[in-house]
Length: 336
Image (cartoon, rainbow, N blue to C red; front, side, top):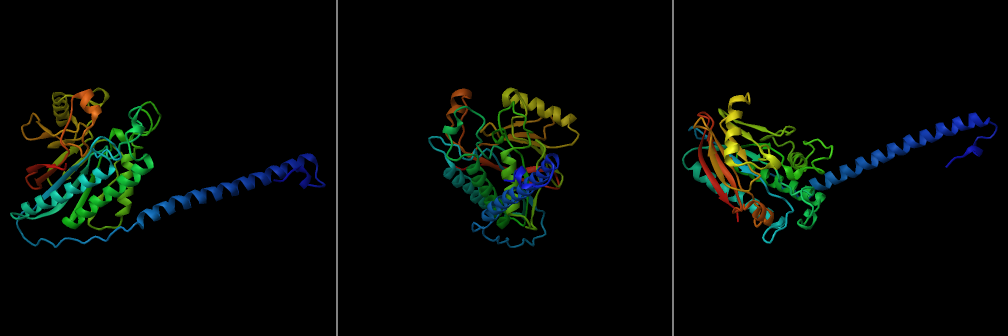
């Protein structure tokens, strides 16, 4: 570290000026080095993530039939990655998520016996991570902290899309973030879109970057538009209506009918997670419906004791006619 004695023959003021200039230069050099180090660490972590044996994608055989095709619609939501209950943890999550993919492939092949199903739209509905900022005791109910949740869930999202690309000729991903991915408390000055779910989506998207048969956009907004030909739907997490993120089915039906008339974008259906239940409520036009999809989680004591809510682990699979713009078949896929 230089001091005044380094500047012999200069007046005290000149010496101070030169010392100040040298310190500023050294500070800038140190900051550049620090920035480069941070960038190298991030790049190294990213490169290591990509190099963990990510397999190549084997595309499916093209369906050359001329008959009218339908599109598969996967609604995958509320994985609560890293949540620990008496029957659930990260390993169980992975097993159940991939079980859904296996079953979705089998059901798709049943549909293909009658007509082509060349495309798939995957709707990730939020709360893919358990987070760490929702309940005071949450740190004692997880098997991975935020870093571990980010790595595990990002890879699992990538695995799901990877498998879908081996089942369908083209895959579109539409992603929504949930309340469990919130960073900090509700009172913290953190933008809602800075969400751990969204970060996991982006990492998974980067893992599959360059895949020409994949369409995957970012999700800065908290309501996502789903468009498959003439079929339209809204993808939400489910905490957009009601106090503290809870509302009755009738309240959701009223909200859905209001959105139908005032949203400014005509849609058929609304897809929700958040409640960890399977349900359907028709909208006033007699055409659209609100679909609640379950969670891969099981034995959530908080939900059981505070809301008397419980559900069998499940996800949702629909098929839509892109020309007529409506659902042709729907399946609740049990994954327990």
